[in-house]
Amino acid sequence: MTVDQAGPDMATSPEGERATPDALDSLGRWTLRPGVSVTVLPHGVHLRGWITSVTLEGGAGLPVLWGRLAEALAGDGGAELARAAVAGSPLRAALVTVIGQLHDHDLLVERPAGEKGDAAGPWLGAVADRPEEAAAALIRSRVRALAARPDGPLARAAAQALDRAGVRAATAEAADLPDGQVLLVAAGPGEPSPFAAEQDVEDRAVVVGLRPGVGFVTPVGSTRQARADADGLADRLRRWEALGGAEHPGLPALLASSAAQRLICAVAGLRDPSAEAGDARLIPGLPAALVAEREPLRGEYRTWAGPVLVDADRVRQRADVRTLTEALARIPVLTDRLAGVLDEPDPGALPQLPAALVRSSVEGDILVSGSARADLARLEAVCRAAELLLGKEDAGPVVGAGAVHARGRALRQAGAVQQQDTRSGDTGPFGGAAPVPWSPEPGRHPQALHWWSVLVRRLGVDADVTVSRLDAGGGGPVSHAQVRALGRTATGGVLGTAVEASADDAVAFAALSAVVRVQAAADASHARHLVTPSGAVASLARPEATAPWEDAGWTTAWLAESAAREPELQEALAALTGWSPQPWEPPADAHADVRALWSALRQCGFSVLSARPGHRTHPTLTEGSR
Image (tube, rainbow, N blue to C red; front, side, top):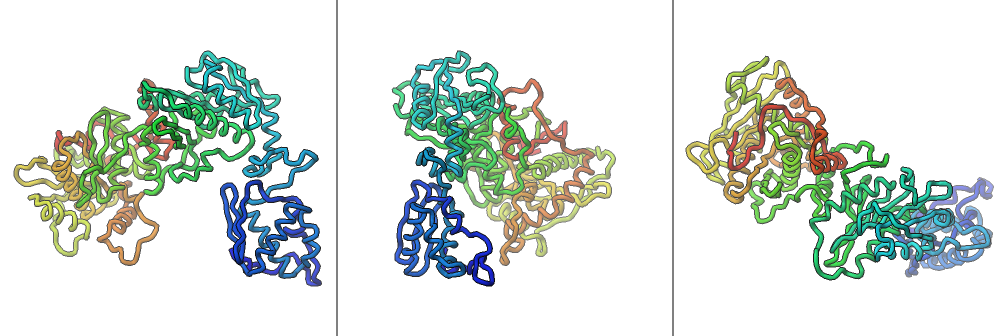
């Protein structure tokens, strides 16, 4: 900032006397944090702290002003400076402004009280809000390193790391811990002993694990939570163990020191080290685990959606995903290479035009997903892969990025089945389907015309489309479109279907689905599962605002239009089918992997709803379309 922007002293009476103390009067309580670096500029000064920095600019006198302030911070606390800077003067206003910026950027820390001076040490002085309180908490704490082999290299390294930080640590044997894991537990005076068999849920614990070629450090939590996280991480990382070869000597030290740092920060009331990393991939509100690898030696914090939730901050309900940006940020958590529960969708060598295709693996089978954009295709691929793993029956669950997206996907699938029943003569309590004439003529929606043109002109598919209006018994409009290839083709008869609020939307998504199917048949014929797009994603992809030039021919504007019709469409589909999706949970006898996936989805803000019984959706490429 520019010091010239400083205003007059607000704490000045009309008579020129200060009515209230200002920042210069209280400067004696503060000193510059240890480790702050100062670079004097020709017309200013630049300060760099642990994680913040600020550049102050002004006239040629600002470096001199900073020199006087720095002397005060290092010496008498500014008593002489406060007397020299008269209340209401430009000098005092400039000093107050600079001091305010130092506070705003966390570059000042309270002076230590008492005769011991800097008992907190330079590290706590550099990072803690109240270094003396943090140091006292560390002195009072009792830390134990529990392991099946307390004389092993990992346990010794952890105890040494704690000792170097000034925290006394003792090692002890815990026969129930797996080999290669060390449990670090901290307890304060009057709390249950860390050696007790049953730990209090309010203790602070972290587990560090080392396996051949890979290791981990759990988030800090209660003993039960830390051990549950350790079991989950060990299970996820088992397939990445590098059997054979000498262990890197730096891996145990990296893991043990990281575990000690996490526990020390928790005891001292400091931010967790993962928060210091500044990694945008980490999801706020979710814990992070450190995962380290031997080749090359490195450690990274990764958002951890563990399968077992014990602590109150882990059990609480997570907010649903509401935007496409939020959904896309959580996909890397679910598909993390080391700690995830799903395979990551990847374009690879698949074509990205006219439709964008991505592929992933589901239990050894290839899944291909396509949409108008690659990000939308990735989201649909993740949702469908999760559905396949959660339930292999016809009436498996429906997964979506939040409740609105999941409900839209489930109701569209049920509406498509209702159309099938109508064609077979089973209309139920509602009327049948009324044909709606549609042809690619001027005046139709640009997206419907675009994708139909791509299908029949660019890809050269001889196709026809039939559109019908489903009677929702007085509800909003529901249109069904089906694109069918004429004659014998490699993809079968029906190329794409869609259930949307308007005839043009239904044709647009049905034609887009047909384009995806034709491209997948040509470029990914080995795929077992195919995922085609629908308008359910519009509720997520709707932008806050569109550019003036983005008309209905742009995908963003089209999705915004579809999102506006989504609430009425979902109400109409619920009336049409006589069914409303309900939250789905794994049965009691479900496999542990199923429960782990369901838990991870919920923690990431995804919704899992029940599907309407008695139908199949998303046919495989080998099965053809319904």
